[in-house]
Structures are given as structure tokens and as C-alpha cells.
Image (cartoon, rainbow, N blue to C red; front, side, top):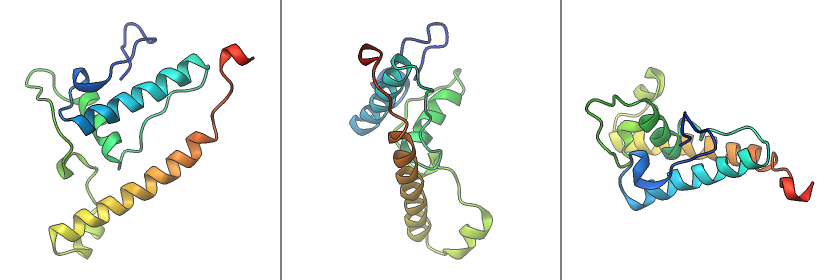
Length: 125
């Protein structure tokens, strides 16, 4: 999470508004990736919106500040399925499994795309 007033400052962990070790690590990883990208002159990235990391980042970036509550990842934060996909699955467990499959597919494609964008550090130029 990048500070608006000082774009070279990134926040990670619980200070971003997430709860839990895994959630804090996810926000720290995303902050670290973007800090490195900023330092090497690359554009910053957003985690895929269907992924847990993307959903957490979206929540903390857009949540109401008046009644803000730190969160753990839940299916409620994930991008909802469209009506056609919801109708395909009667059981909640099956819908959740489908959401996970979509998220993993999007995440894996995003990782492949972003890892090919890595450039040399400024010191190596």
C-alpha cells in the first residue's frame, strides 16, 4: 500500500488494515514488489482482483474510514460470481471451489506476466 502524500513510502502488514499472519505477509509482499518496481523505474502492479491478495488490497484501499474494521480474508471479500456462474453451482462449497479455481488461474497468469517485466536495478545500469 503506497502512501498518497509520499509515493516512495509503502505500508505493509497490519498497519494496512488487515488481520492475520497470512494477510499481513500478502500485503507486505505486494508492498515489497511495488517498492522494488518503483526503485527500478517500473510501473506499479495491482494483484488480480479475483485473488485473495487483490481482494484484501481493494478492501483496505476503498473501505469506509468512519467504521473501518481490520479484516481477515473471507469469501465475502472476493469478487462475486456472475449470475450465470452462481446458477451452475447449488452448493456454497462448489461455488467457493469455483471462485478459488478462477482466482488461481488469474493469479498464475498475472505472475507469468509480471515476472517477465523485471528489469535490471538502477545500480546495474
